Length: 202
Image (cartoon, rainbow, N blue to C red; front, side, top):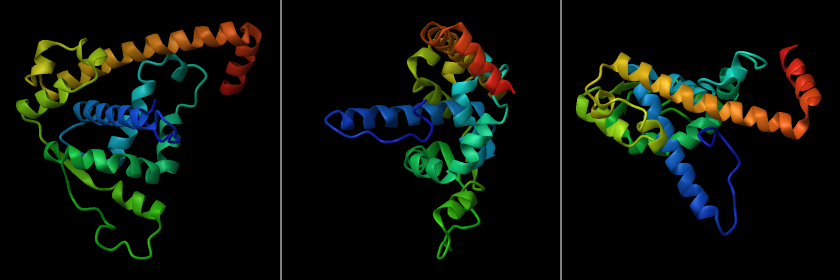
């Protein structure tokens, strides 16, 4: 879940962690671009990114706040902007961003206010087969292996590709969520896990 704002690490392994984090951010953006339509806002992108790790998670249907993704994104827009601005610049050929209300006139505007304005910027995404193939070919291997030849080649329609990626991603997340839940039950015990779930619901 390193595609959401987290604390940075330090120490001898920090460089390796930063590189892995960057790869994670790129993977999250590429996946989200394939899920999103031709035009969308920066806010839409951040909501999609934050929702990746909950697609297919059965806990979102039972015991989790249905507004969890929104509650992650909206108070942290400035952190998302700080994280993803360099990545979005790197992928600029595939996603051309239009101006936002605060661009060129940020004097006296706080970081949080500027992030809210930036979130209104809209992307015109390159939907050509070559662009889609470029995105799909650079997806994380676990996700890419589950996709059809048409989606990997960029020849599937946007809707077909989005639906297929969502299905494969949901399967990956569901397996991970079930594994984490079972480990939690073993570690905490059935009674404590039940109390925790009940507290989340009510």
